Image (cartoon, rainbow, N blue to C red; front, side, top):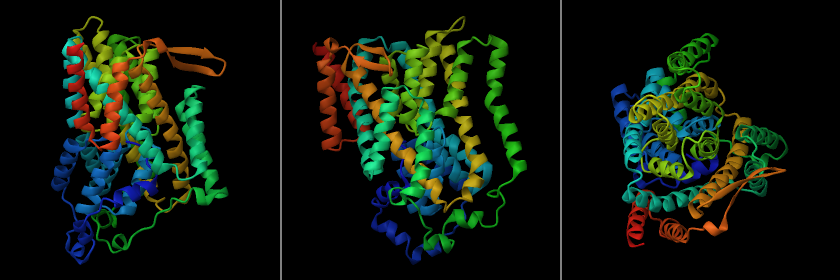
Length: 480
Protein backbone atom coordinates (compact mmCIF):
# COMPACT_ATOMS: atom_id res chain seq x y z
CA UNK A 1 0.00 0.00 0.00
CA UNK A 2 0.59 3.13 -0.61
CA UNK A 3 1.49 5.62 2.04
CA UNK A 4 -1.65 7.66 2.58
CA UNK A 5 -2.32 11.00 4.18
CA UNK A 6 -5.01 10.78 6.88
CA UNK A 7 -7.18 13.45 5.26
CA UNK A 8 -7.31 11.93 1.81
CA UNK A 9 -7.68 8.43 3.23
CA UNK A 10 -10.64 9.71 5.17
CA UNK A 11 -12.16 11.46 2.17
CA UNK A 12 -11.62 8.57 -0.23
CA UNK A 13 -12.93 5.97 2.16
CA UNK A 14 -15.90 8.00 3.30
CA UNK A 15 -16.89 8.56 -0.31
CA UNK A 16 -17.60 4.83 -0.61
CA UNK A 17 -20.27 4.85 2.07
CA UNK A 18 -23.63 3.47 1.03
CA UNK A 19 -27.16 3.98 2.26
CA UNK A 20 -26.83 0.79 4.26
CA UNK A 21 -23.66 2.12 5.90
CA UNK A 22 -25.45 5.29 6.93
CA UNK A 23 -28.27 3.22 8.34
CA UNK A 24 -25.72 1.41 10.46
CA UNK A 25 -24.87 4.71 12.14
CA UNK A 26 -28.47 5.32 13.08
CA UNK A 27 -30.37 3.97 16.03
CA UNK A 28 -29.92 0.44 14.67
CA UNK A 29 -26.23 0.69 15.50
CA UNK A 30 -26.95 0.86 19.19
CA UNK A 31 -28.45 -2.64 19.04
CA UNK A 32 -25.22 -4.20 17.80
CA UNK A 33 -23.35 -6.39 20.28
CA UNK A 34 -20.04 -4.54 20.76
CA UNK A 35 -18.18 -7.69 21.82
CA UNK A 36 -16.40 -9.73 19.13
CA UNK A 37 -15.55 -13.37 19.77
CA UNK A 38 -12.17 -14.68 18.69
CA UNK A 39 -13.74 -17.24 16.35
CA UNK A 40 -15.77 -14.50 14.66
CA UNK A 41 -12.61 -12.44 14.23
CA UNK A 42 -10.78 -15.43 12.71
CA UNK A 43 -13.45 -15.74 10.04
CA UNK A 44 -13.15 -12.09 9.10
CA UNK A 45 -9.33 -12.11 9.05
CA UNK A 46 -9.39 -15.23 6.88
CA UNK A 47 -11.82 -13.57 4.47
CA UNK A 48 -9.61 -10.50 4.25
CA UNK A 49 -6.56 -12.68 3.60
CA UNK A 50 -8.19 -14.30 0.58
CA UNK A 51 -9.79 -11.23 -1.02
CA UNK A 52 -7.26 -8.47 -0.26
CA UNK A 53 -6.31 -7.74 -3.86
CA UNK A 54 -5.43 -4.35 -5.28
CA UNK A 55 -2.34 -3.39 -3.32
CA UNK A 56 -2.18 -1.55 0.02
CA UNK A 57 -4.73 1.12 -0.90
CA UNK A 58 -7.28 -1.50 -1.88
CA UNK A 59 -6.49 -3.59 1.19
CA UNK A 60 -6.91 -0.62 3.52
CA UNK A 61 -10.19 0.29 1.84
CA UNK A 62 -11.36 -3.32 2.21
CA UNK A 63 -10.58 -3.38 5.93
CA UNK A 64 -12.28 -0.02 6.37
CA UNK A 65 -15.44 -1.27 4.68
CA UNK A 66 -15.54 -4.49 6.70
CA UNK A 67 -14.29 -3.32 10.09
CA UNK A 68 -15.54 0.28 10.28
CA UNK A 69 -18.66 0.38 8.12
CA UNK A 70 -20.12 -3.12 8.20
CA UNK A 71 -18.89 -4.74 11.42
CA UNK A 72 -18.44 -1.48 13.38
CA UNK A 73 -15.53 -3.02 15.26
CA UNK A 74 -13.48 0.18 15.23
CA UNK A 75 -14.30 3.85 14.77
CA UNK A 76 -13.15 6.03 11.88
CA UNK A 77 -10.88 8.03 14.16
CA UNK A 78 -9.15 5.03 15.73
CA UNK A 79 -8.82 3.30 12.35
CA UNK A 80 -7.05 6.34 10.87
CA UNK A 81 -4.87 6.80 13.93
CA UNK A 82 -3.72 3.18 13.75
CA UNK A 83 -3.09 3.64 10.03
CA UNK A 84 -0.98 6.74 10.78
CA UNK A 85 1.32 4.70 13.00
CA UNK A 86 1.57 1.83 10.52
CA UNK A 87 2.60 4.22 7.75
CA UNK A 88 5.45 5.49 9.89
CA UNK A 89 6.82 1.95 10.25
CA UNK A 90 9.01 -0.02 7.88
CA UNK A 91 7.19 -2.87 6.19
CA UNK A 92 3.69 -3.44 4.77
CA UNK A 93 1.35 -1.00 6.46
CA UNK A 94 -1.84 -2.83 5.46
CA UNK A 95 -0.73 -6.01 7.24
CA UNK A 96 0.49 -4.00 10.22
CA UNK A 97 -2.90 -2.28 10.38
CA UNK A 98 -4.54 -5.72 10.56
CA UNK A 99 -2.14 -6.71 13.36
CA UNK A 100 -2.92 -3.48 15.23
CA UNK A 101 -6.69 -3.93 15.07
CA UNK A 102 -6.42 -7.65 15.89
CA UNK A 103 -4.31 -6.70 18.91
CA UNK A 104 -6.85 -4.10 20.05
CA UNK A 105 -9.61 -6.70 19.89
CA UNK A 106 -7.95 -9.83 21.27
CA UNK A 107 -4.55 -8.86 22.60
CA UNK A 108 -1.35 -10.49 21.32
CA UNK A 109 -3.00 -13.67 20.05
CA UNK A 110 -5.47 -11.55 18.09
CA UNK A 111 -2.68 -9.58 16.47
CA UNK A 112 -0.77 -12.73 15.55
CA UNK A 113 -3.89 -14.29 14.01
CA UNK A 114 -4.80 -11.18 12.02
CA UNK A 115 -1.30 -10.60 10.68
CA UNK A 116 -0.66 -14.24 9.82
CA UNK A 117 -3.95 -14.79 8.02
CA UNK A 118 -3.37 -11.58 6.06
CA UNK A 119 -0.17 -13.06 4.58
CA UNK A 120 -0.62 -16.84 4.30
CA UNK A 121 -2.96 -17.09 1.25
CA UNK A 122 -0.77 -14.84 -0.88
CA UNK A 123 2.42 -16.52 0.35
CA UNK A 124 1.15 -19.94 -0.75
CA UNK A 125 0.25 -18.55 -4.15
CA UNK A 126 3.60 -16.79 -4.62
CA UNK A 127 5.53 -19.90 -3.60
CA UNK A 128 3.64 -22.00 -6.13
CA UNK A 129 4.01 -19.47 -8.93
CA UNK A 130 7.71 -18.93 -8.16
CA UNK A 131 8.35 -22.65 -8.56
CA UNK A 132 6.42 -22.75 -11.84
CA UNK A 133 8.21 -19.66 -13.09
CA UNK A 134 11.63 -21.05 -12.18
CA UNK A 135 10.93 -24.25 -14.11
CA UNK A 136 9.09 -22.86 -17.11
CA UNK A 137 10.11 -19.20 -17.52
CA UNK A 138 12.24 -20.13 -20.53
CA UNK A 139 9.23 -21.61 -22.28
CA UNK A 140 8.20 -19.21 -25.10
CA UNK A 141 4.56 -19.24 -23.98
CA UNK A 142 5.49 -18.14 -20.45
CA UNK A 143 7.90 -15.51 -21.75
CA UNK A 144 5.15 -14.10 -23.98
CA UNK A 145 2.69 -14.05 -21.08
CA UNK A 146 5.03 -11.99 -18.90
CA UNK A 147 6.01 -9.75 -21.81
CA UNK A 148 2.38 -8.66 -22.00
CA UNK A 149 1.76 -8.52 -18.25
CA UNK A 150 4.67 -6.10 -17.75
CA UNK A 151 2.75 -3.45 -19.67
CA UNK A 152 -0.11 -3.57 -17.17
CA UNK A 153 2.32 -3.66 -14.23
CA UNK A 154 3.90 -0.45 -15.49
CA UNK A 155 0.50 1.24 -15.65
CA UNK A 156 -0.30 0.03 -12.12
CA UNK A 157 2.81 1.80 -10.84
CA UNK A 158 2.09 4.96 -12.85
CA UNK A 159 -1.48 4.94 -11.58
CA UNK A 160 -0.17 4.70 -8.02
CA UNK A 161 1.91 7.84 -8.55
CA UNK A 162 -1.06 9.70 -10.00
CA UNK A 163 -3.54 8.57 -7.36
CA UNK A 164 -1.31 9.21 -4.39
CA UNK A 165 0.00 12.47 -5.78
CA UNK A 166 -3.48 13.81 -6.44
CA UNK A 167 -4.67 13.05 -2.94
CA UNK A 168 -1.51 13.69 -0.93
CA UNK A 169 -0.09 16.82 -2.52
CA UNK A 170 -2.63 19.42 -1.48
CA UNK A 171 -0.38 22.48 -1.79
CA UNK A 172 2.82 23.70 -3.46
CA UNK A 173 4.93 22.97 -0.39
CA UNK A 174 4.02 19.29 -0.48
CA UNK A 175 4.70 19.19 -4.24
CA UNK A 176 8.16 20.51 -3.40
CA UNK A 177 8.60 17.69 -0.87
CA UNK A 178 7.82 15.12 -3.56
CA UNK A 179 10.07 16.76 -6.15
CA UNK A 180 13.02 17.00 -3.79
CA UNK A 181 12.60 13.36 -2.75
CA UNK A 182 12.60 12.23 -6.41
CA UNK A 183 15.72 14.26 -7.23
CA UNK A 184 17.50 13.05 -4.10
CA UNK A 185 16.95 9.38 -4.97
CA UNK A 186 17.06 9.38 -8.79
CA UNK A 187 20.02 11.73 -9.28
CA UNK A 188 21.90 11.62 -5.97
CA UNK A 189 21.24 8.02 -4.89
CA UNK A 190 20.38 9.29 -1.41
CA UNK A 191 19.39 6.47 0.99
CA UNK A 192 15.63 6.22 1.34
CA UNK A 193 15.58 6.20 5.18
CA UNK A 194 17.51 9.49 5.16
CA UNK A 195 14.97 11.03 2.78
CA UNK A 196 12.12 9.89 5.05
CA UNK A 197 13.86 11.21 8.16
CA UNK A 198 14.32 14.64 6.59
CA UNK A 199 10.67 14.65 5.44
CA UNK A 200 9.48 13.80 8.96
CA UNK A 201 11.62 16.56 10.49
CA UNK A 202 10.34 19.04 7.91
CA UNK A 203 6.77 17.96 8.67
CA UNK A 204 7.30 18.58 12.37
CA UNK A 205 8.70 22.02 11.59
CA UNK A 206 5.73 22.64 9.33
CA UNK A 207 3.34 21.96 12.19
CA UNK A 208 4.88 24.95 13.97
CA UNK A 209 5.62 27.40 11.16
CA UNK A 210 2.98 26.50 8.54
CA UNK A 211 0.18 24.65 10.37
CA UNK A 212 -2.32 25.36 7.57
CA UNK A 213 -0.18 23.23 5.25
CA UNK A 214 -0.02 20.31 7.66
CA UNK A 215 -3.53 20.36 9.16
CA UNK A 216 -4.37 16.66 9.37
CA UNK A 217 -5.87 16.43 12.85
CA UNK A 218 -8.77 14.09 13.48
CA UNK A 219 -11.50 14.14 16.06
CA UNK A 220 -13.38 11.38 17.73
CA UNK A 221 -16.96 10.83 16.71
CA UNK A 222 -20.03 10.62 18.89
CA UNK A 223 -20.41 6.90 18.28
CA UNK A 224 -16.93 6.28 19.67
CA UNK A 225 -17.72 8.36 22.73
CA UNK A 226 -20.94 6.41 23.23
CA UNK A 227 -19.05 3.10 23.10
CA UNK A 228 -20.85 1.58 20.12
CA UNK A 229 -17.63 0.19 18.59
CA UNK A 230 -16.22 -3.14 19.70
CA UNK A 231 -12.68 -1.83 20.13
CA UNK A 232 -13.78 0.96 22.48
CA UNK A 233 -15.81 -1.42 24.65
CA UNK A 234 -13.27 -4.26 24.66
CA UNK A 235 -10.31 -2.00 25.53
CA UNK A 236 -12.11 0.23 28.06
CA UNK A 237 -11.10 -1.83 31.10
CA UNK A 238 -8.24 -3.80 29.55
CA UNK A 239 -4.60 -3.48 30.59
CA UNK A 240 -3.08 -4.69 27.31
CA UNK A 241 -3.26 -1.21 25.80
CA UNK A 242 -1.38 0.31 28.75
CA UNK A 243 2.34 1.10 28.51
CA UNK A 244 4.79 -0.97 30.56
CA UNK A 245 8.60 -0.93 30.61
CA UNK A 246 8.80 -4.58 31.71
CA UNK A 247 6.58 -5.53 28.78
CA UNK A 248 9.04 -3.90 26.36
CA UNK A 249 11.97 -6.01 27.58
CA UNK A 250 9.94 -9.21 27.36
CA UNK A 251 8.78 -8.40 23.83
CA UNK A 252 12.28 -7.54 22.68
CA UNK A 253 13.70 -10.76 24.13
CA UNK A 254 11.06 -12.96 22.52
CA UNK A 255 10.77 -11.02 19.26
CA UNK A 256 14.50 -10.73 18.54
CA UNK A 257 15.04 -14.39 19.41
CA UNK A 258 12.33 -15.48 16.99
CA UNK A 259 13.60 -13.12 14.32
CA UNK A 260 17.29 -14.07 14.29
CA UNK A 261 17.40 -17.68 15.51
CA UNK A 262 16.92 -19.15 11.98
CA UNK A 263 19.79 -16.98 10.74
CA UNK A 264 22.07 -18.12 13.54
CA UNK A 265 21.27 -21.76 12.84
CA UNK A 266 21.95 -21.34 9.11
CA UNK A 267 25.21 -19.52 9.84
CA UNK A 268 26.40 -22.42 11.99
CA UNK A 269 25.33 -25.02 9.41
CA UNK A 270 26.31 -23.35 6.11
CA UNK A 271 28.65 -20.54 7.10
CA UNK A 272 28.34 -16.78 7.06
CA UNK A 273 29.00 -16.56 3.30
CA UNK A 274 26.01 -18.77 2.48
CA UNK A 275 23.51 -17.27 0.06
CA UNK A 276 20.75 -18.08 2.55
CA UNK A 277 22.47 -16.05 5.25
CA UNK A 278 23.04 -13.20 2.79
CA UNK A 279 19.36 -13.23 1.86
CA UNK A 280 18.31 -13.43 5.49
CA UNK A 281 20.51 -10.51 6.48
CA UNK A 282 19.51 -8.38 3.50
CA UNK A 283 15.78 -8.85 3.98
CA UNK A 284 16.18 -8.35 7.73
CA UNK A 285 17.82 -5.02 6.96
CA UNK A 286 14.99 -4.32 4.53
CA UNK A 287 12.51 -4.90 7.36
CA UNK A 288 14.27 -2.20 9.38
CA UNK A 289 15.26 0.56 6.96
CA UNK A 290 12.51 0.62 4.34
CA UNK A 291 9.67 3.02 5.00
CA UNK A 292 6.75 4.30 2.96
CA UNK A 293 4.93 1.18 1.82
CA UNK A 294 5.53 -1.54 -0.73
CA UNK A 295 6.20 0.64 -3.78
CA UNK A 296 8.84 2.62 -1.92
CA UNK A 297 10.42 -0.64 -0.69
CA UNK A 298 10.53 -2.02 -4.23
CA UNK A 299 12.60 0.92 -5.43
CA UNK A 300 15.35 0.11 -2.94
CA UNK A 301 15.05 -3.67 -3.19
CA UNK A 302 15.18 -3.68 -6.98
CA UNK A 303 18.41 -1.70 -6.98
CA UNK A 304 20.05 -4.06 -4.50
CA UNK A 305 18.68 -7.42 -5.67
CA UNK A 306 19.32 -6.63 -9.34
CA UNK A 307 22.35 -4.36 -9.27
CA UNK A 308 24.34 -5.37 -6.20
CA UNK A 309 23.59 -9.04 -5.50
CA UNK A 310 22.51 -10.08 -9.03
CA UNK A 311 19.94 -12.47 -7.57
CA UNK A 312 17.47 -11.61 -10.34
CA UNK A 313 17.59 -9.77 -13.66
CA UNK A 314 15.55 -6.61 -14.31
CA UNK A 315 13.11 -8.69 -16.39
CA UNK A 316 12.75 -11.27 -13.62
CA UNK A 317 12.21 -8.46 -11.11
CA UNK A 318 9.32 -7.06 -13.15
CA UNK A 319 7.89 -10.55 -13.67
CA UNK A 320 7.93 -10.98 -9.90
CA UNK A 321 6.05 -7.73 -9.39
CA UNK A 322 3.49 -8.97 -11.89
CA UNK A 323 3.03 -12.12 -9.81
CA UNK A 324 2.71 -10.14 -6.59
CA UNK A 325 0.16 -7.78 -8.14
CA UNK A 326 -2.14 -10.71 -8.92
CA UNK A 327 -2.10 -12.27 -5.47
CA UNK A 328 -3.94 -11.34 -2.27
CA UNK A 329 -1.90 -10.09 0.63
CA UNK A 330 0.89 -7.51 0.86
CA UNK A 331 2.62 -6.51 -2.36
CA UNK A 332 5.90 -6.90 -0.48
CA UNK A 333 5.43 -10.66 -0.87
CA UNK A 334 7.51 -10.06 -4.00
CA UNK A 335 10.53 -10.48 -1.67
CA UNK A 336 9.56 -14.14 -1.40
CA UNK A 337 9.82 -14.48 -5.17
CA UNK A 338 13.17 -12.66 -5.29
CA UNK A 339 14.61 -14.90 -2.58
CA UNK A 340 13.26 -18.01 -4.29
CA UNK A 341 14.82 -17.08 -7.63
CA UNK A 342 18.09 -16.04 -6.04
CA UNK A 343 18.47 -19.36 -4.22
CA UNK A 344 17.12 -21.40 -7.15
CA UNK A 345 19.71 -19.92 -9.50
CA UNK A 346 22.52 -20.25 -6.93
CA UNK A 347 21.67 -23.50 -5.08
CA UNK A 348 25.18 -24.59 -4.12
CA UNK A 349 25.11 -28.31 -3.26
CA UNK A 350 21.32 -28.38 -2.78
CA UNK A 351 18.59 -29.28 -5.23
CA UNK A 352 17.61 -25.98 -6.92
CA UNK A 353 13.92 -26.29 -6.03
CA UNK A 354 14.70 -27.11 -2.40
CA UNK A 355 17.10 -24.17 -2.24
CA UNK A 356 14.44 -21.88 -3.66
CA UNK A 357 11.84 -23.00 -1.14
CA UNK A 358 14.25 -22.61 1.79
CA UNK A 359 15.28 -19.14 0.62
CA UNK A 360 11.67 -18.08 0.22
CA UNK A 361 10.61 -19.41 3.64
CA UNK A 362 13.53 -17.73 5.39
CA UNK A 363 12.75 -14.44 3.67
CA UNK A 364 9.09 -14.65 4.62
CA UNK A 365 10.13 -15.16 8.24
CA UNK A 366 12.60 -12.27 8.50
CA UNK A 367 10.30 -9.95 6.55
CA UNK A 368 7.11 -10.42 8.54
CA UNK A 369 8.21 -11.32 12.09
CA UNK A 370 9.45 -7.72 12.62
CA UNK A 371 6.01 -6.40 11.63
CA UNK A 372 4.49 -8.05 14.69
CA UNK A 373 7.29 -6.75 16.89
CA UNK A 374 6.83 -3.12 15.74
CA UNK A 375 3.10 -3.22 16.50
CA UNK A 376 3.30 -4.98 19.85
CA UNK A 377 6.09 -2.66 21.00
CA UNK A 378 4.67 0.65 19.86
CA UNK A 379 0.90 0.30 19.81
CA UNK A 380 0.34 1.00 23.55
CA UNK A 381 2.28 4.25 23.23
CA UNK A 382 0.53 5.22 20.00
CA UNK A 383 -2.80 4.71 21.76
CA UNK A 384 -1.73 7.49 24.11
CA UNK A 385 -1.05 9.84 21.16
CA UNK A 386 -4.38 9.63 19.39
CA UNK A 387 -4.88 13.43 19.35
CA UNK A 388 -1.23 14.40 18.78
CA UNK A 389 -1.00 16.87 15.89
CA UNK A 390 2.79 16.71 15.66
CA UNK A 391 2.64 13.00 14.81
CA UNK A 392 0.18 13.70 12.01
CA UNK A 393 2.27 16.58 10.70
CA UNK A 394 5.35 14.34 10.46
CA UNK A 395 3.23 11.81 8.59
CA UNK A 396 2.14 14.47 6.09
CA UNK A 397 5.76 15.25 5.27
CA UNK A 398 6.60 11.58 4.87
CA UNK A 399 3.60 10.98 2.63
CA UNK A 400 4.62 13.79 0.28
CA UNK A 401 8.19 12.48 0.06
CA UNK A 402 6.95 8.96 -0.66
CA UNK A 403 5.19 10.27 -3.79
CA UNK A 404 8.61 11.24 -5.13
CA UNK A 405 9.99 7.82 -4.24
CA UNK A 406 7.19 6.04 -6.08
CA UNK A 407 7.80 8.30 -9.08
CA UNK A 408 11.41 7.10 -9.05
CA UNK A 409 10.15 3.50 -9.15
CA UNK A 410 7.80 4.32 -12.03
CA UNK A 411 10.67 5.80 -14.06
CA UNK A 412 12.83 2.75 -13.30
CA UNK A 413 10.14 0.34 -14.47
CA UNK A 414 9.28 2.42 -17.52
CA UNK A 415 12.88 2.38 -18.72
CA UNK A 416 13.27 -1.39 -18.32
CA UNK A 417 9.92 -2.16 -19.95
CA UNK A 418 10.44 0.19 -22.88
CA UNK A 419 14.14 -0.38 -23.60
CA UNK A 420 16.27 -3.45 -24.06
CA UNK A 421 19.33 -1.88 -22.44
CA UNK A 422 19.60 0.54 -19.53
CA UNK A 423 23.00 1.79 -18.40
CA UNK A 424 24.04 3.16 -15.02
CA UNK A 425 26.29 6.17 -15.56
CA UNK A 426 28.66 7.38 -12.86
CA UNK A 427 28.31 11.14 -12.63
CA UNK A 428 29.65 13.74 -10.17
CA UNK A 429 26.21 13.93 -8.56
CA UNK A 430 25.82 10.15 -8.29
CA UNK A 431 24.70 7.18 -10.41
CA UNK A 432 22.03 7.89 -13.02
CA UNK A 433 20.18 5.23 -15.03
CA UNK A 434 19.78 6.12 -18.71
CA UNK A 435 18.31 3.98 -21.52
CA UNK A 436 20.02 3.16 -24.80
CA UNK A 437 17.59 4.67 -27.30
CA UNK A 438 18.53 2.28 -30.10
CA UNK A 439 17.04 -0.55 -28.02
CA UNK A 440 13.54 0.98 -27.82
CA UNK A 441 10.87 -1.75 -27.74
CA UNK A 442 8.06 -0.33 -29.84
CA UNK A 443 5.77 -3.31 -29.17
CA UNK A 444 6.15 -2.88 -25.38
CA UNK A 445 5.45 0.85 -25.63
CA UNK A 446 2.30 0.28 -27.71
CA UNK A 447 1.03 -2.41 -25.34
CA UNK A 448 1.70 -0.14 -22.35
CA UNK A 449 -0.24 2.67 -24.03
CA UNK A 450 -3.14 0.30 -24.59
CA UNK A 451 -3.04 -0.77 -20.94
CA UNK A 452 -2.92 2.87 -19.86
CA UNK A 453 -6.01 3.73 -21.92
CA UNK A 454 -7.90 0.73 -20.55
CA UNK A 455 -6.98 1.26 -16.89
CA UNK A 456 -6.82 5.06 -16.66
CA UNK A 457 -9.60 6.08 -19.06
CA UNK A 458 -12.00 3.14 -19.09
CA UNK A 459 -11.24 2.19 -15.46
CA UNK A 460 -10.56 -1.48 -16.23
CA UNK A 461 -9.57 -3.24 -12.99
CA UNK A 462 -6.03 -4.39 -12.37
CA UNK A 463 -6.53 -8.18 -12.49
CA UNK A 464 -8.47 -8.21 -15.79
CA UNK A 465 -5.94 -5.78 -17.27
CA UNK A 466 -3.02 -8.00 -16.26
CA UNK A 467 -4.56 -11.11 -17.76
CA UNK A 468 -5.67 -9.29 -20.91
CA UNK A 469 -2.21 -7.85 -21.46
CA UNK A 470 -0.69 -11.26 -20.83
CA UNK A 471 -2.98 -12.78 -23.46
CA UNK A 472 -2.15 -9.94 -25.85
CA UNK A 473 1.55 -10.68 -25.31
CA UNK A 474 1.03 -14.34 -26.20
CA UNK A 475 -0.89 -13.43 -29.36
CA UNK A 476 1.65 -10.80 -30.42
CA UNK A 477 4.67 -13.07 -29.94
CA UNK A 478 2.95 -15.90 -31.81
CA UNK A 479 2.49 -13.59 -34.82
CA UNK A 480 6.01 -12.18 -34.88
